[in-house]
Image (cartoon, rainbow, N blue to C red; front, side):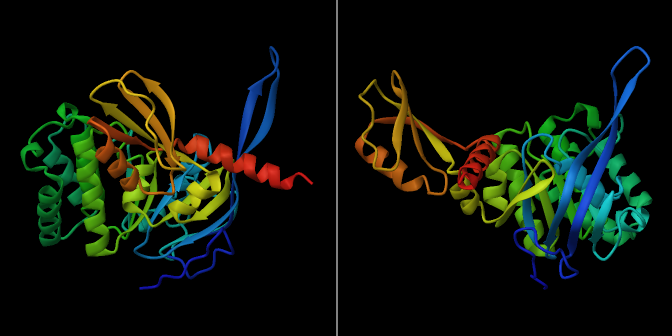
Length: 337
């Protein structure tokens, strides 16, 4: 398996299964400036973007709203044509061979379904079977596997409109994988899901990647998705690649912090936490402790559990927008002479 990759947004050569080389996307936007006047303005959504993804790799692709993530995904699927640069997926130019590419990719949008709203779930799968001309034996094998791993057995005869968000998301993921795509694009696949549904989706994606070496590009605002699924994360903002590397390195670059929320049996003075953890807020028996996101929460939790009467605790992940804001501030500080 080829594991070559171009770190840090380098040249974007042919060694990657997904390859972008100085890709740009510019939109023309018209804005009304008077009764009969309109102003034409060029908006650069993606700006000289270069990276590669190796076959079988799971990569988190994150950034704030409006950063250019969705535009990138649309170019990778052939929905949009780049304004400049070179883009290949499995050796295919998406904008020129969209139909051919469709048989090699699967796409799941967390807030939009590809299932037929008024039909039972199984009928959507039958339509996918015919649309992609999946051999009967392979279709049955894949469907049985998806139903088992995603817990869809009792949902097959239920109309899609009656499914909960978590059930529909699992149904969408199955539909995207019935034709054995080599690449899976996931756009916010766990948005709005409860803890149980999130866990089931993440476990399925890990198993899929391990068994079939499916290449996964994941966009999400939930850093736990990245932490549990991806060894590599890319951060895009204003159409440019700001970071490409492990999640721990992103936390270090942004100096981000997690928050440990501790519920005690009774109101107590602020917890004497080992540095660099510190108490940032106290409300009755509940206390909030901040600690570096690049560090494990386990030692801190063990220390507090041993010394204090606990009722409950939870860990809150840092907000990605805050991480990127700190990265900007750090870069700006270094640029000052």
